[in-house]
Length: 117
Image (cartoon, rainbow, N blue to C red):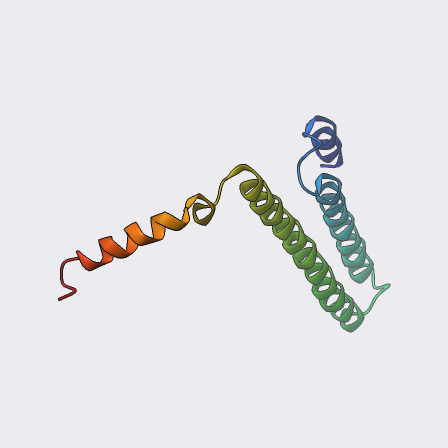
């Protein structure tokens, strides 16, 4: 799995939002599963009590998920921000295209709308 992450990082475009953060999150999930595996083996061997295992898993699971949710939310927000900035830079907004004389034409059209009697 780690080789896949490194291959993705090497071949992915450099303008992808949070490219390095995505790789770090994936490697972080690998580390988390490794820790869960070690904790399970320690519990099976009797090194760690069942209560300690439960408390560690609950705490670590909640913390890891919270961190991942915040990170992925940040990635998504940065993508939407980049999209909005690109749209504003490329497009001429409709209200910029209206000239002062066009407002009179719009008012005349409103008078002729059906059902407005």
